[in-house]
Image (cartoon, rainbow over all chains, first blue to last red; front, side, top):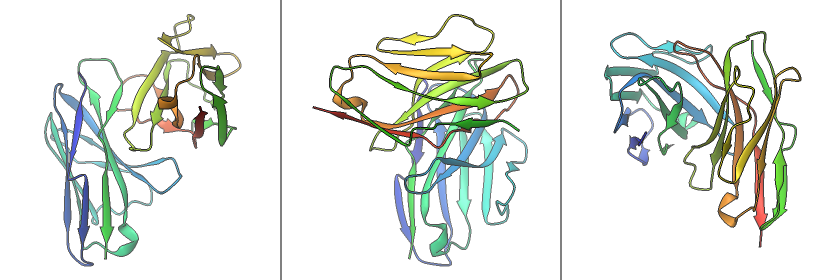
Length: 116
Length: 115
């Protein structure tokens, strides 16, 4: 149980284009989903917290107009990187908090984004 | 604000031996959770073990156990009978009790299990 999927697992795009990453909780309902960014050999950096049906809460320094987050249902959240640039290249990871009350975050496998 | 410190950037251990990873944290909260997550080369974050602060008993999961010292704000992970598959980055994390609280991660410890 407690499986979180992400799609795509990797993506390459041209500078200036937009990329959408999906995060799904497959066997539980997630009241809250989180989006992280991870640079090589570093820890996870929280970008934003999203609750189903409401606006995401962004961490300080994260551009909300560049990183659009939508949490349309209890099992799906999307992150759209708009007008991507090479500096947006990174590993993006989502996690979902189990609504069932365990208060544990389960992580997706991550998406590697490369912007040319 | 909460902080989590992992003072060992890298560690190594021989297969079948025991290793302990250190973690300290700073908080003024009385109710919270502590976690150890593992990130192998595949980069999938995997929950290893969790501890509720109100529980005095240390959590265990098969070969993994913790030494939770609330007063000292210490939360170390012991891996017994180390296996090659234990090679990974290990992150200690803190989360306040309840709500949509976020995880606060340490910088991680890279563990290598040698044959």
